Image 1: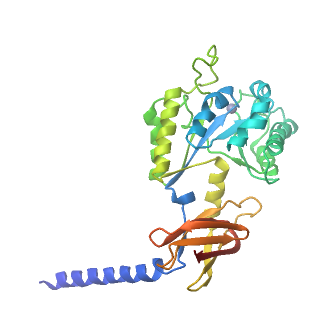
Image 2: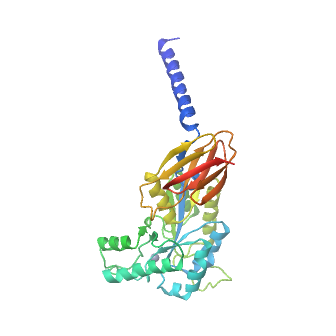
Image 3: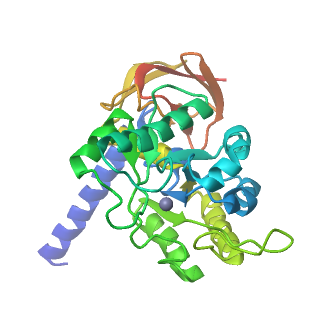
Length: 341
Ligand SMILES: [Zn+2]
């Protein structure tokens, strides 16, 4: 055997020994906790975004989402004809199914000046806050409406100011993500889903109308109607990826909160003994708005099969898998207690 070869073998042995030591000391230690990249350890996140409060949203889009246990973000215009006609649907029914509303201005007609913009954007926001119970203020997703040239008469700084005053978070851009407009074939839609998974990123599709078929009113279609078969195929594809734990399908604000919180999230072991583990999760984002529970994975002693996780007045029973307990926790620095059941 040559010296070089012996050196190589010794090197390999040392490397494996180091790896072994690391795994026994770091990952296998009870209390060792990781913060999931996305909720429930999904590989990627995905959001379906629906614009302009078209009737085909509740006629076609939402029933298909409910059937698959999914949610979407609906960018509403409370001052637009289609919305006003079906106001009771939007305000008394749809959000109760778990759908989330975003701000797309009151009328979708553009803004004449700063004051008009404050009404177009502020009034839409107020309608969402008044309609859907929850924290006030809270973050709401914002999508600027596409309007004709000359119809948007405020500058970027003025818009930024209004968005900030209303706690609005701008959604990702329309470019390359518009159903019908950019995306036509199933492969184009599934490619967006696959890319999100490959890059462990947040993917999205922006939809306007959905195709209506008999026996529904079929005399006219909503704007840019997406073919129904294509829509169901996309949803089924997403569901298959979700069921393989690859896709967290949720609304824009949840994705924004998780991503923002994750950037500065830290988990610390406060106390640990044979009977319990106490941790705390913190992050630097403003706790008034960034309070979404995050997924933690904690290694527990090998004898613990089921655990009880308590944080404040929230308690959940979790079954341990491969020595790891996976659960949700708020990033507010309050104590998280894990105990065997
Ligand atoms: Zn629009």
